[in-house]
Image (tube, rainbow, N blue to C red; front, side):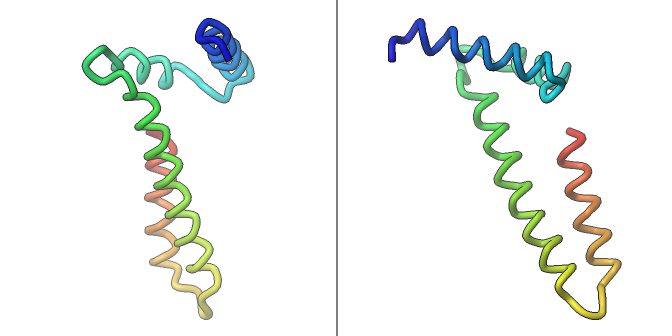
Amino acid sequence: MERNQLQRQAAYTRKSLLDQGYLDEQFIQLEDLQDEANPNFVEEVVKLFYTDSARLLRKIDSALDDRPFDYEKLDDVMHQFMGSSSR
C-alpha cells in the first residue's frame, strides 16, 4: 500500500475513533508529546497500556477463581486496573 494512502487511512481511523468517543483529549495530549526524537511514542504507550491491561485482567480472573475470595487482593488489582485506565 502506498505511503500516502496509509497516512490517509490512519488519519481517517483516528478521526473516526475521536468522533465515536474511543479517543479523547488525553490521546491528543499524548500525541503532542511525540516528536522527532521519539516518533513512536504514542505507539509505545498504547502497546504498554494493552500489555499491562492484559496482565491485570489475568490477575483479576485468577483472583475471581480463588475460593474463598480474597477481596483485598481483588481490590488491589482492580485499583491498579482503574488507575491504568484513567491515565
